Image (cartoon, one colour):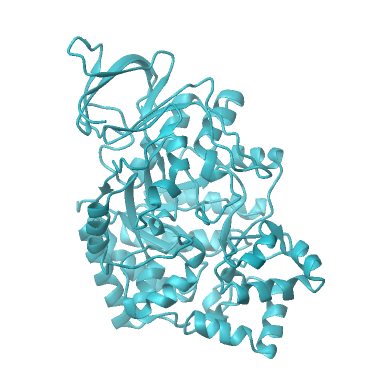
Length: 545
């Protein structure tokens, strides 16, 4: 439904961390026209928000959902984000973006990223970021989409999956492609330095590439090399060096702070000192402590030199396979990793849960741990794992062992104490029965359990973390706030009833409490009813300074 909409009698929390107030909101077209006490005698469509919070639409600052937006099924696939109150999605994270694409290397790129794709795959009907945006605008978007450009995508386009430093001409090609993407409206550069092929990059390559961001004031958004290892401090220092040298904002993705408290404190000190020097640093995190990613990340990076087909050739060789098994089991992080052609983060243990199986005969292993699968096969768990990776062509993904609720709560309480921390979902396998509860209730979990029940935040601060803060971090003008002239992305919810009902052991439950979701002035969700045919979203494009 379009036209003027009057939201009456609401509790307005405007996304700036300012105190709530009661008032009315008049929407005209896709913008907020008036705020205050507004006469409804002209009979626009009226939403009575008495007793309800009227907030800016929530912004999911860390996703990989750009792989779904080109699909004609994306509105249905991503519907649970509407039930949570999300109106804007930031995608292209962790160094992987669905554009630009060099079709010569399309197969290599798509094979490595297959765990994040729709189950029926993806046809790359574009080449540049500009082409992608035109394709999406022509076909329609269910949500607003802001796109980062991925370093791994740029590197693959320039040189495939070669396990070496980039040559000057290859870096120049990456820089030109990044500039074209930024000119088209991409909002920044993401890094995935724990993944191939970014793992093979020297810091100098990243510094040079990120220099393109400077005239745009666009953020660098890294998945750092040593997220969960004893080298967390060095990994943080590396990306700070890149940002500081280029005078650009730094936003660290899912900055968990590492498992070692001593290293976590050291990394925090490094960040604080950089902020004191004037470096703009922020980060995001997820509402559950488990993570999910491609099973391919668990193998030695050297096996991917030349691409995915080369990996499968090598891992099928008995001698190489045995050597790889030894390296997986006896992994020890080394810094800098390029001197050893080695991992920093490897993410492997027998308690990892596997998901996203495509072959019918293997679906019995869905959401089973590697240890359990070994028992089901009656063979060594690592051998069973490698056999399944080969049989499924690397398209499955793993999920770190789920924590119990109390551990999850402790995790969130520690991470979200940082005032510069916004909220993302970081979900993969969305079209493949993901077992992560984040795709069903990340935002309601923060508002219900951690705000209303545990008082970790005021409601104003919690909403700021989901709206105004990520809009500032990603430089999304007139989004994430309620003010005259801003885009009318609005979420209306019952503060006493908003709740996540999804759990690790039983994830497939929609949240409660969200009453209305408006995207660019159109009602996309109303009292439990979602309209996948509305397609009210827009591509949010950055502008040069």
